Amino acid sequence: MPFEIIRADITKLSVDAIVNAANASLLGGGGVDGAIHRAAGPALLAECRTLNGCLTGEAKITKGYQLPAKYVIHTVGPIWEGGEKGEAKLLKSCYVQSLNLAVAHKLESIAFPLISSGAYGYPKDQALQMAITVISDFLMHNDMMIYLVVYDQKAFVLSEKLFASVQAFIDLHYVEEHALFNQRRFEKIRSCVTESQHEYKPSRSLDDVMQELQETFSEHLLRLIDLKGKTDVETYKRANIDRRLFSKIRSDKYYKPSKNTVLSLAIALELNLDETKDILQKAGYALSRSSRFDVIIEYFINEGNYDIFEINETLFAFEKTTLGV
Ligand code: AR6
Image (cartoon, rainbow, N blue to C red; front, side, top):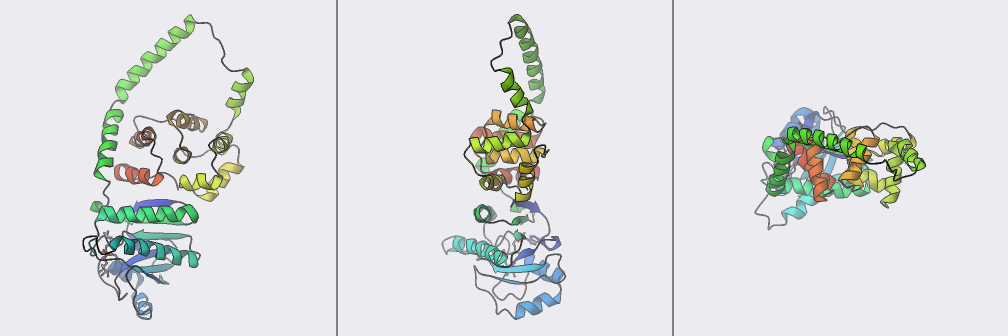
């Protein structure tokens, strides 16, 4: 199941569990901890008192009380002391232990704040990278809807290098639309002229063409999955889409997916630009140079970078929206 980065107040989310970036006493504090206790009401503190605190890197679960979330998973992140004191290992453990608790309680959805990135001073870009890495590894072997909640504007920092190259690609391609339109028109006219000068020689048999024409999006996708030697599970996980959505596509030959779903699957199958355009066309869509979203996808395909979580990090930074789900 998928992973989404969202900008929200975690106390407002209707998920099975929200994660609290707590301190070792588990008796409340500032930041997200304070906000969760305020929203949950005093019964949360009463239950926390029975837990005897929590060690750094570990996690404990309580009910959600007045929160829309059913549970709160309290975890204690490391205090940043320069990075040489095992902070990364401890931060990783916070995510892993919280996710393990969620599995043990058979939870289907969970929302994390960026643990340690506030009062505890962990550099936000590294905290974000850690969250993304652990969550994406986990999702390769587990089914859960996971939200990573980014609260303040500054929390979201793409690596400068990636940001600069995506920005350069957008600048080059996005603004070129007008010139491109004229160029396309010119090419179309030219190809009409050339075609009329040549005898039409079909390169494929009529049967082949009919076969291709009749292939629906669903059939095309299933054929590509086989062709690329992937499994269904691998495909929908890499696409960051829900297993149930994938089953619908598989069982309904005429399923009409959203453009977002098609692009997610194209990334999962590591399709090149032409193959991506083909599969989009099967579902009635096209890549547009006047959509920044599409230009960013094109950038990653050109780079041969099919890491959906890195793509989503970038889409979120530029467009406040992501692939999959
Ligand atoms: N929803 C989502 N994220 C939030 C919210 C919210 N309502 N409020 C803050 N954040 P912090 P820490 C973000 O300081 O660094 C407490 O006093 C915030 O922008 O809450 O792990 C505890 O009791 C930041 O990115 O937690 C501990 O003593 C992230 O949540 C100590 O702070 C974490 O910031 C823990 O420090």
